[in-house]
Structures are given as structure tokens and as C-alpha cells.
Length: 99
Image 1 (spheres, rainbow, N blue to C red):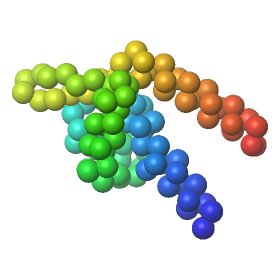
Image 2: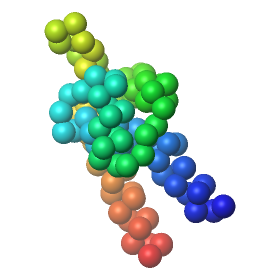
Image 3: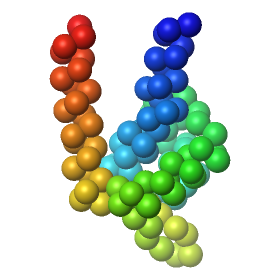
């Protein structure tokens, strides 16, 4: 169905938006990112998917890894925050045009 495809595209296939949203609140390690997404947005991406997205985001410079007390935490970079803001502006303008 068209609606189900839309939901999939706006959640799982654009998971980086949700990851950035929860990382803006505070640095988190991988499993904590998944848990925060489930609690805040009411859907639960697979653990493998979350780590794949985190890896891609690090590679693209949107976030960086920080070691603290033997744990690897993820934090947004300035470039990542700027990209997230541009995505927000795009979604806001698209919403205005569509609806």
C-alpha cells in the first residue's frame, strides 16, 4: 500500500534523521541510540540497521566516535548538525507545498 511505503521511506530508510535527533539530546552508544528511537518515535529499527547507519554517518562526517570509560559514544559534528537543519528545512518546505 502507498501509505505503508511512505512510512517505511520516512522511518527506516531515513533513519539518520532519527539518529541525529536523539544524538542532539546527548552523546549515546549504539544500543542506547536504538532504545531512544524506540522510546521517542515509537518504532524499533533492528540493531544491525542502527549500527550500519551509525557507521555510514561516521564515514560521511555527520557524527564522530568518542571513547569514554571504555565505551564508544557517538556525537554529532557541526557538519552533521548543519545537514540535519537543512533536512528539517527541506521537510518543512515540502510539507507546506504538499499540504
